[in-house]
Image (cartoon, rainbow, N blue to C red; front, side, top):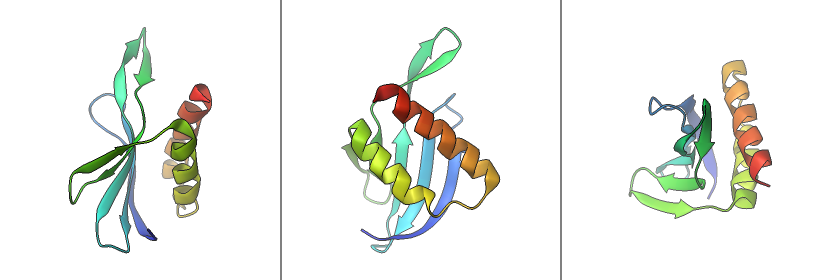
Length: 98
């Protein structure tokens, strides 16, 4: 799958899930998602990462190593400074689990 472009990098309004939304050459929209699983005190706890095809609703659970590979692949398309901060936050989540 080739990435066409990044649509958004955001923290969802559910209180902390992190996503990179992108379109690929198959014309589908995907999310690389780090879902919020809950809280540990004031800190957000993340569940297993996933790659979600938003067009077909197919979700693939990822291990942390695969999520890291996807994040590195996607981050080459990030130019916005605000987005960079969220990418760094995602990398911190990965680092905490590896």
